[in-house]
Length: 322
Ligand SMILES: Cc1cc2nc3c(=O)[nH]c(=O)nc-3n(C[C@H](O)[C@H](O)[C@H](O)COP(=O)(O)OP(=O)(O)OC[C@H]3O[C@@H](n4cnc5c(N)ncnc54)[C@H](O)[C@@H]3O)c2cc1C
Image (cartoon, rainbow, N blue to C red; front, top):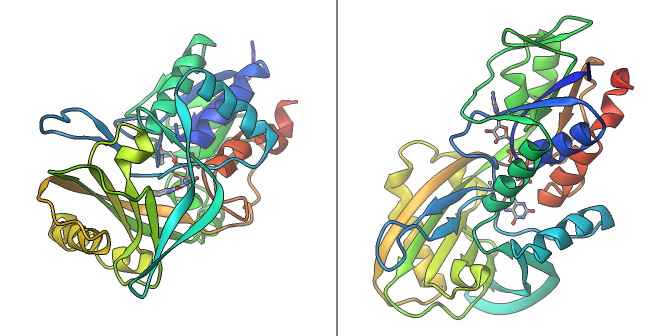
């Protein structure tokens, strides 16, 4: 019988860890508490004509590529038509001046970044991985020769999530305390549709603003030119506004409209909260030999690529399985 591994989290790090584990001959079960897979690859669907069910990315805005290992994966996604190169040039808003900045190529996904998680989970299912969505895990206990995930025994477990979330599940008090030290910053993410042509900008970093940090033209990101805009707040603004978020929607949208000088009517809007949007770069907490933790935090630049690569390296933490 192959050794059994539970992966808790169907975000991008859990998915890449699951690939590595199943390709190495282990029996893998993925648990995730969310209604949908993908974690912070957040998506909402528009409700009103003519854009009924059109997706909008409301979590991760795009991804970049720097390492060959991730590049290979991205090329696969490109060849399947799942992702495309979007732009390497963003505008910058600072003190009411607008300039441009060029950086790495940013990639977008036609059906939203969550579609990558859906695609990868279908691939994992074909490889024999069990995937259980809407399964919140509340307890993981190290039993020395086994790990108990609620009342199910596994040979090992992978926490594919921020340390703070893992600290809520792990029963060991010392470990809980260490993991809960991870710094996570919140963001509010609003989106709106205007009754007009798509705005002219691809995206804009908003610097030194009290409310807004980034504005994205989802129509250009998705390449359908729909007049849909996504606005992300600063961490400081979100910190004190994580309750009753609907109350802040108009304020956030109004700032977005003002910065982009949009005069058209807003015909649909919405807001979501990410209480753990950005994790600070962290050292990995020493885990018991049958436990691993993966995610975007274990890099100097937490992001999608870092999460993917950290999942791929999962076996370096689980030598007990070798
Ligand atoms: C608003 C926002 C904007 C961002 N912008 C960018 C960007 O432009 N570019 C970029 O590269 N990255 C961006 N990111 C960061 C990027 O989304 C993350 O780096 C990446 O998605 C992290 O993946 P992960 O698998 O490590 O964690 P997550 O995606 O957080 O996955 C963790 C999973 O664990 C699950 N889970 C947690 N607790 C439990 C439990 N008890 N039981 C079961 N399941 C559980 C959660 O449901 C979740 O699915 C952004 C994130 C946000 C929120």
